[in-house]
Length: 287
Length: 166
Ligand SMILES: Cc1cc2nc3c(=O)[nH]c(=O)nc-3n(C[C@H](O)[C@H](O)[C@H](O)COP(=O)(O)OP(=O)(O)OC[C@H]3O[C@@H](n4cnc5c(N)ncnc54)[C@H](O)[C@@H]3O)c2cc1C
Ligand code: FES
Ligand code: FES
Image: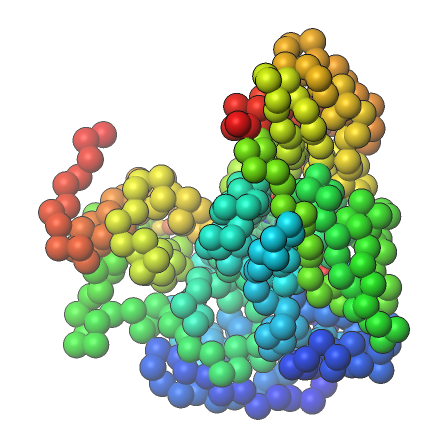
């Protein structure tokens, strides 16, 4: 369980980090909280020749509400998200999700930037970001660009991040006041990745669903936005029929792997149940 | 690979070392500093036996490199007792409530409970259980660990500890 040898670098600005990554080439990787990368390095599933540790870059930290959108620095930890008043007020669904990630120790180190940049289908934040319509700012030697979360994920561990780029911040449009939200995650134990999970953000008018978006975690190689499932509940009062229609539409796009968390049929089935539960709980919270 | 010079404060003492970047912090603490109270259970970030306190955060020291702790302020189980050598409230709780059997998980549990009570001096039973959810114990069934932490909270708050009826 000893990682392979690597060169260690600790830049103090994003510009220096980008320069380092460019000069060190393919062998170099950013190191954030290290709670996905270091376990992979111990198993020698990752053998980077250089690590560029982002911890000493103060600009990558912090959470701001800019009116209309919440901006979260990539190196903000899950623990800091849970302690943030801005998040509690504007994006309570992030609190609900962060609390379901791993355990207190992991949350003190693990960052939101690492969670969304990692590309592991088991990570909880990516589907959340798709559901919330978030976008990521990526900075490389060619400058900065913005990529929507919905365009970021290409396959397991394949993302729109180019080699040498750093994800610097996440920008999330503030959901409407009075929106309902829920993240339902089925897992075998505390600290486990999802067997299946669903995120829902919706608004209700006169007892009927006015807007809705649904995201799915660990039910495919990438996080999924369940657009048809969301359409199936618009205009309904979330009666049994429309809940089942939403679950069925969501199951249509799921293609989970069969693993220790269960066979494909089971994971799709519970995926549908997570969608129904999240819809119901979100609706109860909407005002 | 070139070695890097690191300095950090461990249990109030300035320490230094020359480390390869890939050296895990837990190995630096156990092998270089000879502080073997911090245990290695799983080495896969699950069990929490290697938990230490770094700059006010509970961290699994098997999942951080020693170079990353350069300049840090660290507390390990060896530094938990009161300055006069008497047991801290948490340590006393573990003894009084039989919060350990084999003792393998205990250093990590105590260091974690120490931080939990700093952040939340009056935790509910649920807060305690969630607060130690990153620390596995194969012996006790957790019941007495929860009581030990409740005992410590009462002691710190100067309130009376009443053992909940089972
Ligand atoms: C026991 C355990 C249980 C866990 N359970 C869960 C869970 O239930 N749900 C969940 O979502 N996660 C879980 N995790 C993973 C955890 O949340 C990680 O912290 C997270 O996946 C990665 O964040 P990090 O900051 O640790 O990133 P790192 O491990 O440092 O990096 C991960 C990857 O992303 C890249 N990267 C990191 N930051 C950036 C950046 N700013 N720009 C570009 N690339 C970057 C790195 O190069 C690396 O390839 C668990 C981890 C453990 C150890
Ligand atoms: S040895 Fe570090 S978590 Fe188990
Ligand atoms: S007392 Fe034996 S593992 Fe906890």
